[in-house]
Amino acid sequence: MNTKRRSSGFTLIEVLAAMAILTVSVLGLTAGVLVAFSGNGRSSRRTQMVEFAQSRLDRLTAATKVDICTGTFQGGVVSCTKMNVTPFDPNAAPGTGGWMLDVLDRPATTGTTAAGVDLMAGPVLVLGDVGGAIDENATLTARANLMTEWGTLSSGGAGLGCASALVAKNMLCRELHIEFDSVTSPTYYHVWVRVSRGQSYTDGPVVLEGMIAK
Image (cartoon, rainbow, N blue to C red; front, side):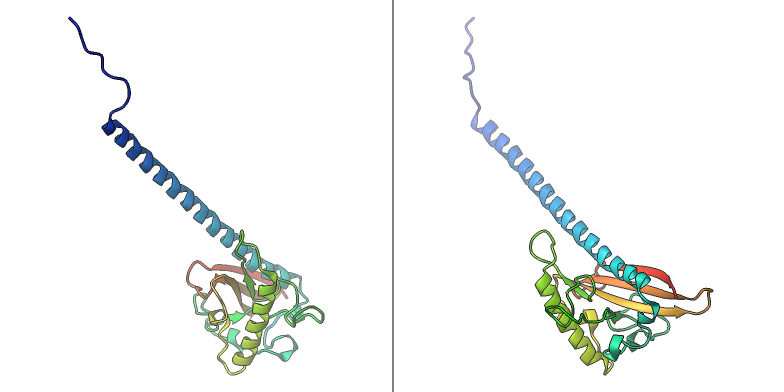
């Protein structure tokens, strides 16, 4: 009995089915890559926020204790009365509840701006467009503007700090709360540092807490 041999090749239905499977696979792979890139970006920003917060604790630990702001800004330029709140609320909005803008460092006597040239010294870091690098010029400019605003407004009790419209989404903004602990022996400064991205102080900020011997 003669039989007919099936022609070699694929039918249109088989080709369409294969293309559909391939399309779904490529879409899934693309989505996975995008999620991975997004996760890496968040992780990188989180690391920067932690480092920015930790740098303040390290500086306070190494500072001469009379330089730690407990009542007035260095040089008497800015009032630190924002920190004189009882009880302290770590979840309070910027400029309230005991939080104040991180303006502890003295302005540099030399440098291109009155705010100094040490990028880790001031209250803000401006993130660049490539790889989360820091935009140095933008950081110095933003720092000077924010410190000027704080000095002008805080004297009247309205210092905005990290809630200021000057704080953009691509900035890391640092706040402080410092209390003098006279109960323990030796005495300590109790320090909180908060770093937020932009004005979103409730959107995953980094809060570090430390005790510094007086």
